[in-house]
Amino acid sequence: MPKVNLSHFEAALLFAFFTSIVLGVVTKKTDRERLMYGLKSFGYFLLALLSIGWLMRLGHG
Image (cartoon, rainbow, N blue to C red):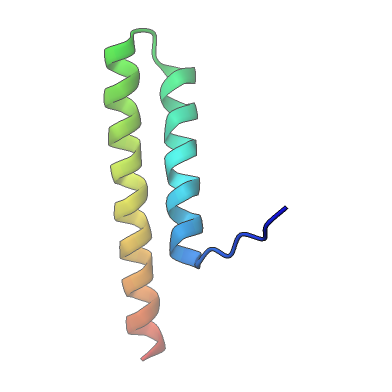
């Protein structure tokens, strides 16, 4: 089996993607609600990822 080398950012994006799918499927009842909630949670994950990344960069110098 080939070895997969992901950067930290790519791994975080994959985590955000799959977690958003699971949250959308588990928490909502209709397909439209699932899609909208999944997209919204993915956006929140990306916002948090980028915000925390910039805070760490500014803190590190």
